[in-house]
Image (cartoon, one colour):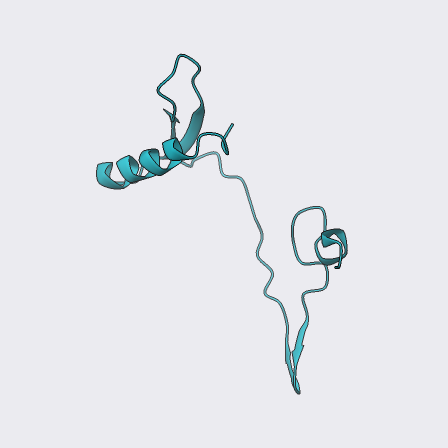
Length: 81
């Protein structure tokens, strides 16, 4: 087994992203991740107990999609803090 530290850097980006397959070389595309302060999010409680666990979801989602997210997130509350 190869330790993941050898494959990924501290930002979870592939450490050596050049792929070689046969005689084809594929260069990686640089994607810059930025945190935007204008993202519209809302905290949602995913527990039904006295101890609340809040997760942030987009305010731009339709109510139906929000309900589906809350349902699946509530099912796996132990994964989210």
